Length: 146
Image 1: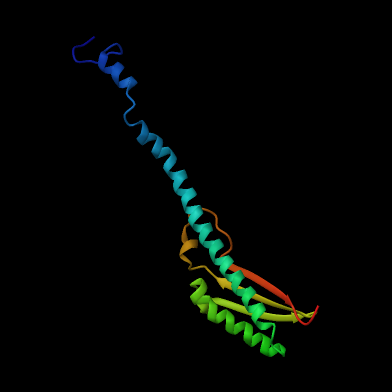
Image 2: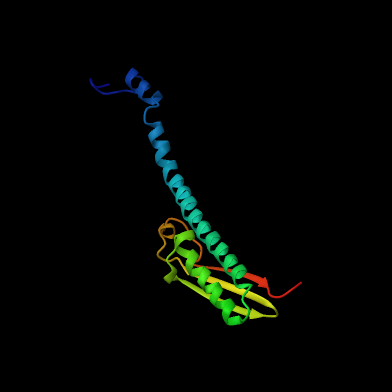
C-alpha cells in the first residue's frame, strides 16, 4: 500500500462506512417530492370542494328563495337576485364568472349554477390532475303543495 492511500482496513474507511450523517438528508430528498405533491393535492382539492360546496349552497338558497314567487318570471328574478347577492359575500367568488339558469318543468323549479374557476388560485397547481374547471351545481324544488 502506498503511503497516504486509504485501504479498506484503515480506521478512517471503517468509520466512513458506519457513519450515518447525511442519511436524513438523502431520505428527505427521496420523500420531499411525494410530500409536496400530496400537500398540493390537499390544497387544490380542498379549494375545489370549498368552492363546489359554496356554489351548491347558493343554488339551494336560490331555489328556496324563488319558491314564493307567483309567476315563472318572478321566481326567476328572485332566484337570480339571491345568487348575485350571495356569490361574493358568502363564497368570495366574482359574480361575473357565474352563469345562472332557472327552468320549470313538471311542477319542479330547477336552478343551475355554473362557475368558471379556470383562474382560481386553488386550481393553478399543475402538479396533480385536477377536476373540471367549470363547477356545475344544481338544486331542484317542487312547486305547489304536497
